[in-house]
Length: 215
Image (tube, rainbow, N blue to C red):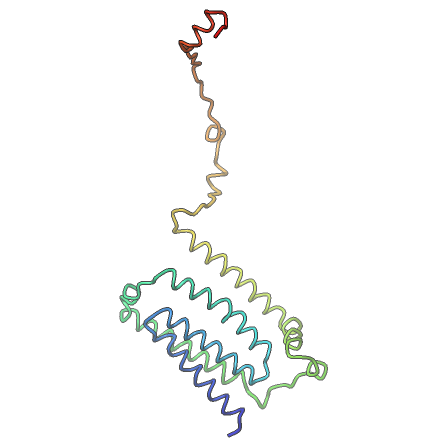
Protein backbone atom coordinates (compact mmCIF):
# COMPACT_ATOMS: atom_id res chain seq x y z
CA UNK A 1 0.00 0.00 0.00
CA UNK A 2 1.44 3.35 -1.03
CA UNK A 3 1.31 6.58 0.94
CA UNK A 4 -1.61 7.96 -1.09
CA UNK A 5 -3.84 4.99 -0.30
CA UNK A 6 -2.80 5.00 3.36
CA UNK A 7 -3.72 8.68 3.76
CA UNK A 8 -7.01 8.13 1.96
CA UNK A 9 -8.05 5.30 4.28
CA UNK A 10 -7.04 7.31 7.34
CA UNK A 11 -9.02 10.41 6.36
CA UNK A 12 -11.97 8.32 5.12
CA UNK A 13 -12.11 6.41 8.43
CA UNK A 14 -12.01 9.65 10.41
CA UNK A 15 -14.74 11.06 8.16
CA UNK A 16 -17.04 8.07 8.70
CA UNK A 17 -16.43 8.11 12.46
CA UNK A 18 -17.06 11.87 12.72
CA UNK A 19 -20.24 11.60 10.65
CA UNK A 20 -21.50 8.79 12.89
CA UNK A 21 -20.78 10.84 16.01
CA UNK A 22 -22.67 13.82 14.57
CA UNK A 23 -25.96 11.88 14.69
CA UNK A 24 -25.25 9.93 17.90
CA UNK A 25 -23.70 12.57 20.18
CA UNK A 26 -25.91 13.60 23.10
CA UNK A 27 -24.51 17.13 23.32
CA UNK A 28 -25.24 19.56 20.44
CA UNK A 29 -21.84 21.17 20.95
CA UNK A 30 -20.12 17.77 20.64
CA UNK A 31 -22.12 17.03 17.48
CA UNK A 32 -21.11 20.37 15.96
CA UNK A 33 -17.43 19.78 16.79
CA UNK A 34 -17.56 16.33 15.20
CA UNK A 35 -19.13 17.94 12.13
CA UNK A 36 -16.13 20.28 11.96
CA UNK A 37 -13.87 17.22 12.07
CA UNK A 38 -15.93 15.60 9.30
CA UNK A 39 -15.60 18.68 7.09
CA UNK A 40 -11.86 18.82 7.69
CA UNK A 41 -11.46 15.12 6.82
CA UNK A 42 -13.50 15.57 3.65
CA UNK A 43 -11.32 18.53 2.76
CA UNK A 44 -8.22 16.34 3.12
CA UNK A 45 -9.77 13.68 0.87
CA UNK A 46 -10.49 16.31 -1.78
CA UNK A 47 -6.93 17.53 -1.47
CA UNK A 48 -5.71 14.01 -2.20
CA UNK A 49 -7.92 13.99 -5.30
CA UNK A 50 -6.18 17.23 -6.44
CA UNK A 51 -9.38 19.25 -6.02
CA UNK A 52 -7.64 22.12 -4.24
CA UNK A 53 -10.38 24.67 -4.81
CA UNK A 54 -13.12 22.49 -3.30
CA UNK A 55 -10.85 21.57 -0.40
CA UNK A 56 -9.97 25.16 0.49
CA UNK A 57 -13.58 26.32 -0.05
CA UNK A 58 -14.81 23.63 2.35
CA UNK A 59 -12.36 24.75 5.04
CA UNK A 60 -12.90 28.50 4.59
CA UNK A 61 -16.68 28.51 4.09
CA UNK A 62 -17.98 25.66 6.21
CA UNK A 63 -15.34 25.13 8.88
CA UNK A 64 -14.32 28.78 9.14
CA UNK A 65 -17.72 30.46 8.90
CA UNK A 66 -20.78 28.21 8.96
CA UNK A 67 -19.68 25.90 11.76
CA UNK A 68 -18.49 28.79 13.91
CA UNK A 69 -21.96 30.31 13.53
CA UNK A 70 -23.52 26.94 14.41
CA UNK A 71 -21.43 26.71 17.57
CA UNK A 72 -22.35 30.24 18.66
CA UNK A 73 -26.06 29.58 18.05
CA UNK A 74 -26.01 26.21 19.84
CA UNK A 75 -24.19 27.59 22.86
CA UNK A 76 -26.38 30.70 23.06
CA UNK A 77 -29.72 28.87 22.73
CA UNK A 78 -28.97 26.30 25.46
CA UNK A 79 -31.15 23.66 23.79
CA UNK A 80 -33.03 21.25 26.04
CA UNK A 81 -32.21 17.82 24.59
CA UNK A 82 -34.79 15.96 26.68
CA UNK A 83 -37.68 17.95 25.23
CA UNK A 84 -36.40 17.42 21.68
CA UNK A 85 -36.12 13.65 22.10
CA UNK A 86 -39.69 13.26 23.26
CA UNK A 87 -41.68 11.23 20.75
CA UNK A 88 -38.55 9.87 19.02
CA UNK A 89 -39.76 6.28 18.75
CA UNK A 90 -43.20 7.47 17.73
CA UNK A 91 -41.84 9.07 14.56
CA UNK A 92 -39.04 6.53 14.02
CA UNK A 93 -40.92 4.30 11.49
CA UNK A 94 -41.70 7.22 9.19
CA UNK A 95 -38.18 8.64 9.54
CA UNK A 96 -36.67 5.20 8.88
CA UNK A 97 -38.78 4.76 5.73
CA UNK A 98 -37.76 8.18 4.41
CA UNK A 99 -34.10 7.43 5.21
CA UNK A 100 -34.32 4.12 3.34
CA UNK A 101 -35.78 5.86 0.28
CA UNK A 102 -33.00 8.47 0.35
CA UNK A 103 -30.36 5.72 0.70
CA UNK A 104 -31.78 3.86 -2.32
CA UNK A 105 -31.81 7.06 -4.38
CA UNK A 106 -28.20 7.87 -3.43
CA UNK A 107 -27.10 4.31 -4.27
CA UNK A 108 -28.83 4.54 -7.64
CA UNK A 109 -27.15 7.86 -8.45
CA UNK A 110 -23.71 6.78 -7.22
CA UNK A 111 -23.71 3.46 -9.08
CA UNK A 112 -24.94 4.93 -12.38
CA UNK A 113 -23.50 8.44 -12.29
CA UNK A 114 -19.84 7.63 -11.55
CA UNK A 115 -18.97 5.03 -14.15
CA UNK A 116 -15.20 5.55 -14.43
CA UNK A 117 -14.65 3.58 -17.67
CA UNK A 118 -17.22 5.80 -19.43
CA UNK A 119 -15.96 9.06 -17.90
CA UNK A 120 -14.91 11.61 -20.50
CA UNK A 121 -11.55 13.33 -20.06
CA UNK A 122 -11.24 17.08 -20.00
CA UNK A 123 -10.80 18.78 -23.34
CA UNK A 124 -7.19 19.75 -24.14
CA UNK A 125 -7.87 23.46 -23.66
CA UNK A 126 -9.39 22.82 -20.21
CA UNK A 127 -6.90 20.21 -19.01
CA UNK A 128 -4.03 22.73 -19.15
CA UNK A 129 -5.67 25.31 -16.86
CA UNK A 130 -5.88 25.14 -13.04
CA UNK A 131 -8.79 23.20 -11.60
CA UNK A 132 -10.43 26.36 -10.26
CA UNK A 133 -10.66 27.83 -13.75
CA UNK A 134 -11.66 24.45 -15.18
CA UNK A 135 -14.48 24.20 -12.65
CA UNK A 136 -15.69 27.69 -13.55
CA UNK A 137 -15.62 26.86 -17.26
CA UNK A 138 -17.66 23.69 -16.72
CA UNK A 139 -20.20 25.34 -14.43
CA UNK A 140 -20.85 28.50 -16.41
CA UNK A 141 -20.68 27.00 -19.89
CA UNK A 142 -22.22 23.51 -19.77
CA UNK A 143 -24.20 23.74 -16.51
CA UNK A 144 -25.28 27.39 -16.45
CA UNK A 145 -29.01 26.68 -16.25
CA UNK A 146 -28.74 24.22 -13.31
CA UNK A 147 -26.51 26.71 -11.46
CA UNK A 148 -29.13 29.44 -11.91
CA UNK A 149 -31.90 27.10 -10.76
CA UNK A 150 -29.86 26.21 -7.65
CA UNK A 151 -29.30 29.92 -6.94
CA UNK A 152 -33.04 30.64 -7.17
CA UNK A 153 -33.84 27.69 -4.87
CA UNK A 154 -31.34 28.94 -2.29
CA UNK A 155 -32.80 32.46 -2.48
CA UNK A 156 -36.33 31.11 -1.95
CA UNK A 157 -35.06 29.01 0.98
CA UNK A 158 -33.45 32.06 2.61
CA UNK A 159 -36.64 34.14 2.24
CA UNK A 160 -38.79 31.28 3.57
CA UNK A 161 -36.49 30.75 6.56
CA UNK A 162 -36.62 34.45 7.46
CA UNK A 163 -40.41 34.55 7.06
CA UNK A 164 -40.96 31.43 9.18
CA UNK A 165 -38.60 32.70 11.87
CA UNK A 166 -40.14 36.16 12.21
CA UNK A 167 -43.76 35.08 11.91
CA UNK A 168 -44.05 33.69 15.45
CA UNK A 169 -42.10 36.42 17.23
CA UNK A 170 -44.06 39.01 19.19
CA UNK A 171 -41.50 41.77 18.72
CA UNK A 172 -41.29 41.42 14.94
CA UNK A 173 -42.66 44.15 12.69
CA UNK A 174 -44.52 43.13 9.54
CA UNK A 175 -46.57 44.94 6.93
CA UNK A 176 -50.16 43.92 6.24
CA UNK A 177 -50.77 44.93 2.66
CA UNK A 178 -54.51 44.26 2.74
CA UNK A 179 -55.07 46.59 5.70
CA UNK A 180 -52.89 49.26 4.09
CA UNK A 181 -54.96 49.17 0.90
CA UNK A 182 -58.31 49.39 2.75
CA UNK A 183 -57.24 52.32 4.92
CA UNK A 184 -59.38 55.47 4.92
CA UNK A 185 -58.72 59.12 5.69
CA UNK A 186 -60.53 58.88 8.99
CA UNK A 187 -58.20 56.08 10.07
CA UNK A 188 -55.12 58.20 9.47
CA UNK A 189 -56.25 61.72 10.52
CA UNK A 190 -58.50 62.85 13.32
CA UNK A 191 -59.22 66.51 14.14
CA UNK A 192 -59.69 67.15 17.84
CA UNK A 193 -61.04 70.47 19.20
CA UNK A 194 -59.31 71.53 22.36
CA UNK A 195 -60.80 74.29 24.53
CA UNK A 196 -58.41 77.19 25.23
CA UNK A 197 -57.05 77.35 28.74
CA UNK A 198 -55.95 80.71 30.18
CA UNK A 199 -53.79 80.37 33.20
CA UNK A 200 -54.16 82.94 36.00
CA UNK A 201 -51.03 85.00 36.66
CA UNK A 202 -49.04 84.14 39.72
CA UNK A 203 -49.14 86.39 42.85
CA UNK A 204 -45.60 87.70 42.39
CA UNK A 205 -46.29 88.63 38.78
CA UNK A 206 -49.50 90.48 39.82
CA UNK A 207 -47.65 92.49 42.49
CA UNK A 208 -44.92 93.45 40.02
CA UNK A 209 -47.47 94.69 37.51
CA UNK A 210 -49.29 96.69 40.21
CA UNK A 211 -46.03 98.50 41.24
CA UNK A 212 -45.35 99.57 37.71
CA UNK A 213 -42.81 96.94 37.00
CA UNK A 214 -40.45 97.91 39.90
CA UNK A 215 -38.79 95.13 41.85
